[in-house]
Image (cartoon, rainbow, N blue to C red; front, side, top):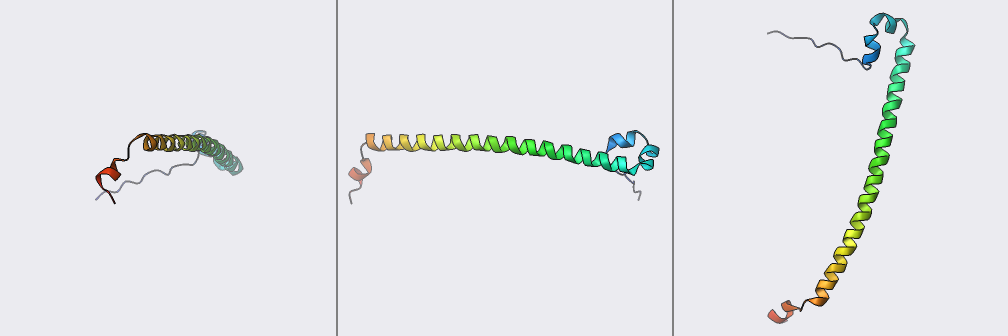
Length: 91
């Protein structure tokens, strides 16, 4: 049975494209680039979180409006329709 070994996945492909010589000679630059990438990702995630929270707020407001309209229409129907259930099934 044959087993293939997959190559290691690097955290930062841009640094690896420059060659192993430059990244091994300056480990601080690799760490700095990794930190920059993490901060960029954090910023993107925070922006997405803000947008999602705004969307949720709008959806909740819309839901409250729909519930109010539903309840209002239900009251109108209840007051406009005759109470047939009382006529068919007297208590």
